[in-house]
Image (tube, rainbow, N blue to C red; front, side, top):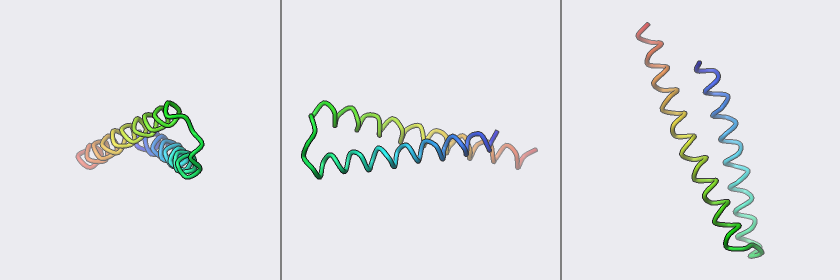
Length: 68
């Protein structure tokens, strides 16, 4: 179970980093619509929340395995 969570975590972290890079690029160029930037930032926040949840799940699962 932990391996699946770690794989998912890695995928989400990669997506988050790519979105970060895209947002930074748009902000630096100044060529973007406010709606576009808002949507991208909400997606980034959602990914950050998912990453935090999975990290908690991994910690919980690791604790459960120690107790077995």
